[in-house]
Length: 97
Ligand SMILES: NC(=O)c1ccc[n+]([C@@H]2O[C@H](COP(=O)([O-])OP(=O)(O)OC[C@H]3O[C@@H](n4cnc5c(N)ncnc54)[C@H](OP(=O)(O)O)[C@@H]3O)[C@@H](O)[C@H]2O)c1
Image (cartoon, rainbow, N blue to C red; front, side, top):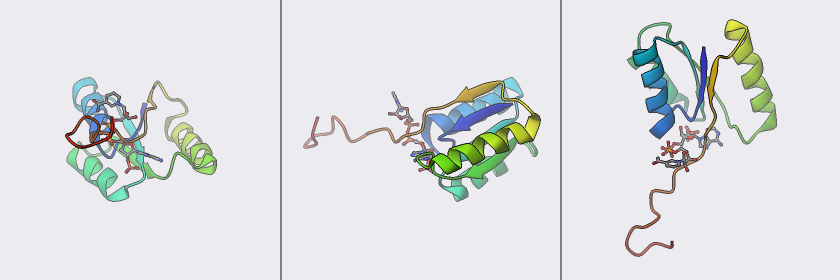
């Protein structure tokens, strides 16, 4: 069982996909945008992804997430904890460094 933060986009989404498709793991996926989490869940084999939406900046959500994750399987074997938006605009012409 893997807990993947930032699973609605970018690296987190791809890590979730690879853990399911490449490693056969079950993934607990979290981010704020539920529509994107639902799309990820629906794209992958049934039962391989469980989703919980919320803001990791909120301590109450972090507590809820951990309780939910442990409730899914009793343990978390792997955790990808790297939420945050990648500043893709850095380095573009005219933008600040
Ligand atoms: N991409 C790279 O090449 C690269 C290289 C080095 C480091 N990084 C770092 O790796 C991290 C992810 O990069 P990325 O390219 O995958 O970024 P991204 O495409 O912007 O994805 C960020 C993910 O984090 C989630 N997120 C952001 N704020 C959140 C919050 N408050 N609560 C819950 N989820 C939150 C977003 O989902 P929601 O908006 O749905 O909540 C999204 O799923 C960033 O910290 C970035 O600086 C990236």
